[in-house]
Length: 108
Image (cartoon, rainbow, N blue to C red; front, side, top):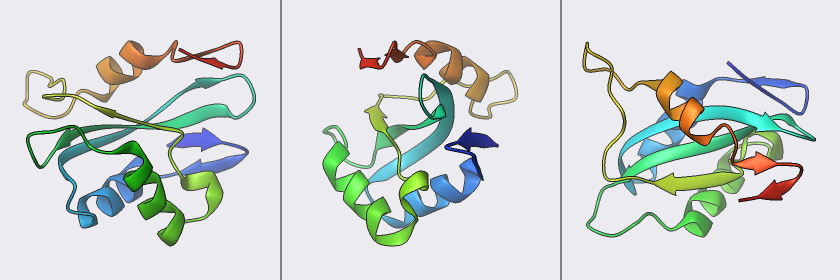
């Protein structure tokens, strides 16, 4: 669970909504520390096309379907998502990689 703005948000619910957009081949929703929100929602995605996923398009997609507190603060495109030895998406590694994304209210 991601706890943001006092709400509990299911990462799998966010990922399913991302898949319905058709913009991504893979997606992982993670919570990273944020000075004001507790945790900020970050989507790490692999594009369904050759180019990066357009962050504004993703945010608009979410704004149409979920409450404001469930809209990701950032969308980051990678060529592949980290995997654990069992082949599953390694959310802990992704969360550690982006843990310092929001430092003192500044977006790096």
